[in-house]
Every structure is written in structure tokens, then in C-alpha cells.
Image (cartoon, rainbow, N blue to C red):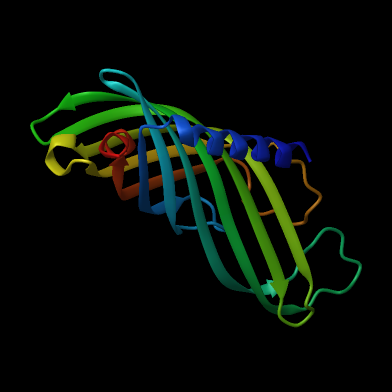
Length: 211
């Protein structure tokens, strides 16, 4: 229960931060993981940014990824007194995350800015399994804390003002603290996530100045 409460608090905090942000952005992304349940899904990201000094800013980002796959084997869900049968098992794994990071503009070229940064991440992992023959269903929910590092290239504001284009590469790591009785619990222990994002940002301050 405390994990869900934590995630709700972060969601409320994120929404309340909208009125204080200076930049809004969206992006599509590709993720590579060492998890056989998540594999290498495609997702999307929504971000808010605020400048805190000349070359630095804070970023709050929400991300969503999903992976659907089928397997053939024995359905496992806790202690099963019945004799297991082999069947097709449909598995849906999805990831929600909130990320808080600090970025520093390391190098400013004429039309491109190079930034590096890092921060903290809260990830909620979910998986639903359903057997094609037995119709048995199992659910698994795991909320994790972790760290993130990033490097980003972004067009200068003067180039496409009030828009800017960006590409960012990230590496994230989380570890599970869940103790489960599942025979085959998904996601395992530590997970490493590598992502690349392509997106666009809009300067809200410039929009408000035009109104």
C-alpha cells in the first residue's frame, strides 16, 4: 500500500509543478533493458523544466513503456496445488516512472547546446499474465527507487524559437526491495535501463509574453 501512496504523492507533486515550469516538452523513446519481461520497449515522455541559474535547470519527467509478449510453458502463480499443464501464456508488462534531474549546459555551440546531468527516479513496474487454457491470471506490482545519468543535445532557443529540438541518452538503474512468494517473480533484482529520446520543447514564458 505504501508504494501506491508514494506514487500518488509524486503524481500530485508533478501536476502541481506545472504552474511553475518554464518549458514543456514531449518525446518518443526507445528503451533497452536486461529484463526478459520488459525487454526493449518503445514509449513516450512528458517533461517540465525550470531554469535555476544561467547554465542549469531542473527537470521533472513522466515516462511510460509497455511490452507485450507470448510464451509457452507452465503457468505459475504462488503455490499451485494442481498439476500444471503447458499452455500459451500472454504477458503484458508496463512501466511508469517519474524522474527528477539536474542538468548543466556543459558546452554551448552556436546552434547546439550540450548538457549533462543526473538525478533520482521512481519506477512502478506491473505485469499481468494470463493462461490461454486455464484462464488463470496473475498480477505483479513493484515500485523501485533508482538513479539516472544523462547527456543531451538541444538546439539553441534562437534557432527555432519558441521551440527547440532535443535528443537525450540516459542510463538508469533500480533494485527491487520486494519479497515475493511467487514461484517465478517477474523483473528479478537489479535492472539497468538505457534509453534514447527524440523530442520537442516549447518555451512557455515566451508564449505568456505574447498574450
